[in-house]
Length: 139
Picture 1 (cartoon, rainbow, N blue to C red):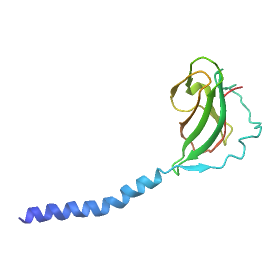
Picture 2 (picture 1 turned 60 degrees about the vertical axis):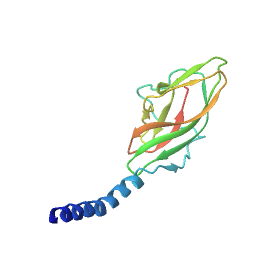
Picture 3 (picture 1 turned 90 degrees about the vertical axis):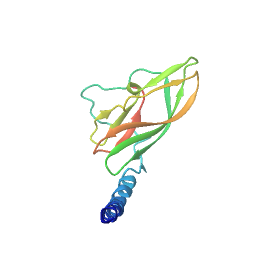
Picture 4 (picture 1 turned 135 degrees about the vertical axis):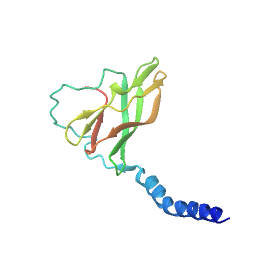
């Protein structure tokens, strides 16, 4: 009987003390929208490695940048397939220019678009201590 009370007490203590850390994990993963002051501006970052998005037929209509306190970087993008035929959008067709002027593709993605179709989707750029300044889809 005492064992049952000890087991119940231990379980209750674990629940009480673990709950705040579980709640903290959830709030730490919250994404917030970031300002994008360079969205419609030219950036004059060096591109020593000559890194550009792969040639494609997608128009980047609009985008917003999101991040977490841990440094996760995301983009919420709206793309339009400018071709009359079906095309597949992949991660090599989009780049983020980061605050240190480096360029980074999103994590693997493959999305089919019908001809002239417009779609909004979220893309993940992984972790970075530098913010995303701008997204580009073409040279």
